[in-house]
Image (cartoon, rainbow, N blue to C red; front, side):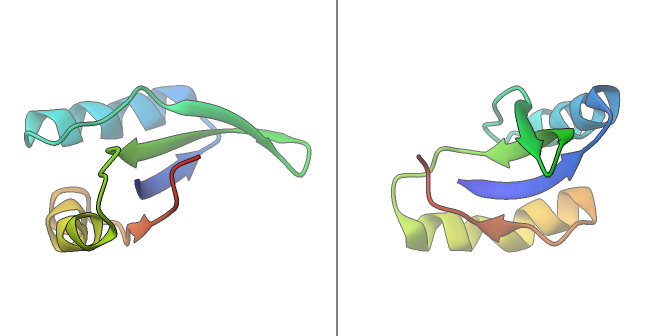
Length: 75
């Protein structure tokens, strides 16, 4: 997976999801997680089966979103 960001506000996470989808990237709905007692909504591109392909997506994702995405293992 390419993790793009985590947001405390689901609406903000959905805005980023829409932006990524508009750019033609495969994006799941935000994943709700609990971290240190807080609810966050994680935005991820993928899944991408090959780590090299996921890493190759990073510059495109960063350009579209203005974030610093990173590759994470898919559970």
